[in-house]
Amino acid sequence: MRTSIATVCLSGTLTEKMQAAAEAGFDGVEVFEPDLVATPASPEEVRALAARLGLSLDLYQPFRDAEGVSEEEFGRVLHRARAKFHLMQRLGIDTMLVCSNVGTATVDDDEVSAEQLRRLGDVAAEHGVRLAYEALAWGRYVDDYRRAWRIVELADHPAVGVCLDSFHILSRGHDPAAIEDIPGAKVFFLQLADAPALTLDVLSWSRHHRLFPGEGAFDLGAFVGHVLRTGYDGPLSLEVFNDVFRQTDVHDTARQARRSLTWLEDLVGTRPLPPVGEPVAFDFVEVRAEDTGEVDVLLGQLGFTFRGRHRSKDARLWSEGTARIVCNEQHARDRAPTLAAVGFEVPDPAASADRARALQAPTVYRRTLASEQELPAFRAPDGTEVFLAPVASGEAPWVPEFGGGQEPGPALLTGIDHVNLAQPWQAFDEAVLFYSSLLGLVAESSSEVAAPNGLVRSQVVRSATGACRLALNVAPLVSRDGFPQHVAFRTDDVVAVARRAIDRGLRPLAIPANYYDDLMARFDLPADEVEAMASLGLLHDRDASGEFTHFYTATVGGVFFEVVQRRGGYDGYGAPNAGVRLAAQHRG
Image 1 (tube, helix red, strand yellow):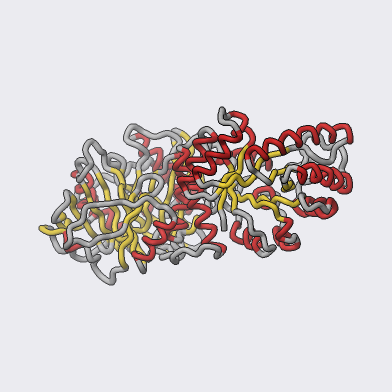
Image 2: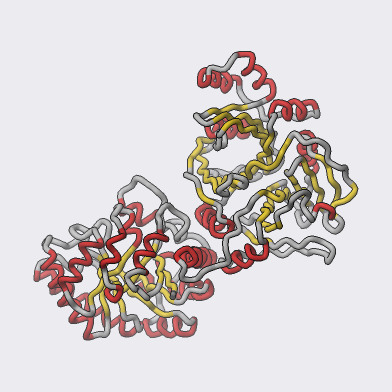
């Protein structure tokens, strides 16, 4: 199917928006009237630019307050409409979005609204224009697409149809199944937007918090399925009002928007992609810095074995169980330690790479010798490099590229439990779509944690099995070294790991005595057990399914580590302890 995007989705001028939409691979655009009014380009110049860019101009929008009005007011509506229809002829646009009346409606009568749309349709037809009537979620009388369709049926005019907008339908909780009762020929346009689950008035929700498909809580796959079953053959078009998207780089946002439609097209089967290769394990995590020496020390204290230096790169490998950490000092001048890359074991790296390219994920290129394992890699919205590795039955095939180290012994750490990645505020929603569309990771419900300098927004995306979990966090205020990120390692004996680490010189993150007093109150734990936990810097949580005990290291640059032990069916991350950890890190 053809794809389109409303210019309101993007930052910049009208011409900049059109150029970015074309570069991102859209087939057309909806022209948002304020964008046209503000441009110095004439309608003819806009039309010519669209032709040069290979874009169709699919919709002129919005035309407001058209129906349900007095006869005197409707005369003014016709005057406005004639001017807009003439403008549309100059632009070469044949479809106008007509929103249900919000401001001037005084007559709550479907017959009156239908009669006025019929008369408006007569004028539109004289100019070669169609009217796509849309029920706004906050319309004064018409706020339900089913009522909008009844009015269009009553109008019974070939130039009058409906526009279906996922936000206006799903935000009101209306059942989209009745869409299939509308003949496809009368569905003149389809607008798509996702949104987070919020308890908010629909106007504010719509104007500030819409998202691209796959980034929110709406079931857009089912919604589009209903529309396609009508026989609709127009474009899939995005109309997303979002404060962040109107500020971010127009080209980046356009690519993000196009990726969301590519994902949706795959979901509904109109343009299938190579199948999702859900990761079965973490392959490695890379820490990059000009000097990773302090990270080496932390890893040694936690029990990792130094496996050697890479044969052609300035990088070192540490491992314990299936957990592998690469410390990379190549191309990292003046850089403090950060998490730079995450490797995932996937069933078919080549197919996963083909899917990533189809989704326009930026490719990462690293110099690799002929004798070295080449892993396809792509850049996430926050800059993290995501590597796709084959599933390994034992040691990863690239490990022999590191030499001069030691052979690992018995392991107390069994693998990587989860990776925590800090996200720029403008990349948070895109990151969720990136990991879900490329790797099939599923987003859990988001949460907010109080930190000394504000709220930290957190969103976990994970594989269905829980083998790979990413915690994506947006901090309210970054420190001079950036908001810290971390890797959490699994163990079956967190007490033994903590004791071994302390014996080797580790100083766990300092946890205040008040926390342990509260712990005894919450869980009725024996005083001697809590005292032992305090001596090791251990934190604890419990739910109906099981228990979770963990500790943190100090932060080096922008990186720290966590060791976790899960018991029973506990599937969380110690959320009640996150605020304590953030406060302790704030103290330094």
